[in-house]
Length: 152
Image (cartoon, rainbow, N blue to C red; front, side):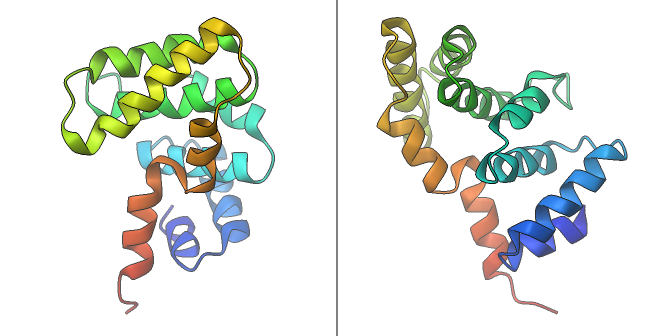
């Protein structure tokens, strides 16, 4: 997986996706590796495959805050693919768990609340989900830090 993140830091998404896919096929289940891989899969046009992976068992059964990030990623994919029930379930989970979120997390709560409304009304994918996909998604801060790390 190290090679996958190094490729991602070099902005070589093709090599990164290949490395992540190999890692995942060999049984890799690390949390951020899986999220990064599914974001790359979506960017490469395989949103259904990405959603299938995120809809499987989460790599960690412990009730930890990162489960909310996983649910938001899954909600965005379900929303984009038109699965209103799954999108609404996961957006609602995010909105409920982070209802009293710190200021840094409030944009995600707003996005989740908008997603719930959109799913209930049957409206097409909203601007917030499209914007999330183009700005790098949930791992953007991670990949930005990786890219800024001096090479040895």
